[in-house]
Image (tube, rainbow, N blue to C red; front, side, top):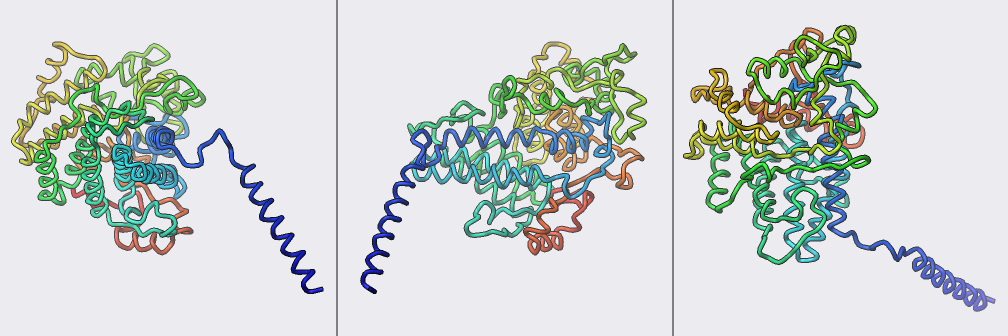
Length: 478
């Protein structure tokens, strides 16, 4: 009887094994790859990342308001800095769960396929994501991030260490990127698979980070710039080389355009409208739309921090939306512009990190910003010669800070970060805001971190300071 039972059990086990094998075979989709393809992954992860960077939560509803590029004409709570710990989850959750995870996979596939160019591109983009995260939150998971099999609850690295780690990653990326290797890539929606352009973008990010840390560690900042020069590295060298994602018609439209299809919450800020008027700046019609009703100024900004009733009193039809350039479905999301690169080179020269001519580079940067919107000619010459625009070597932060702020219009996260770093332009918070006259200097951590990564969250707060919008970050020295 015992042998009979064992026999029956063996038959059933064999049948189950056979059935499982058949089911495994049945469940294979012949039209889908079993291993992720780096080109499709690169396209999808890049777009997801840029959509988040250029979209509502991190751009339109926060950093563009903090930089006083945009303002709110309805539901003005965010413009009065009324946020909760669920307000800033998008950059964090997308950045870690999709962007960093996706770029890590591409790095892994690049190594497996012996294609260092995939690895280099993914390292550059991952570095950019980490930069966005640390610029916004401060101390963040970096060294253990994206390694879910090893670290379910990753530690938070200090912001200084994150910046230095990213610089090392970008140096590695620079070495991995080789246009002459014959290793082609596909799926690149930023540079159309042009590896030489990615090398320039990598160096440009290294310069951006060198300046980010310059007020805290000038020696390290100069060392980074010297390394780039010693490598013979080039930077973004024209507007045609801007790092940007060019959108298409719906449903692949620019996130700003998508938002305005269904909502009408945002207007251009009175702060930047007034500045552009004062300088007779030809970018005003690009940055702002004419008011729907005829008004004396044609372009009317909403004061940041208005109450709902104050904004309503100005009215939807009597205030300016962002310009039609930015509302176009195909408008590009700019990650790094030639104008920014020239301003960065001007600052590096002003700080004595290079022997270039700071004033000349400053003028070139302004011209590049105008040219980005197809504006050129004698009007630009006249603009640069104005007393309020002429380069002031004794206060380069003011000259560069104010003009860079104008040039970065629409790039909320970067404009906000640079204003915090350079302290220009000097912006004033409305009396209606809730931070006692202060403008936010960081995002607060998502509330989920307290429940899912509680101890490391507590350690970060203990190290960095209270988890508040007003706690200054390491890079923000003054």
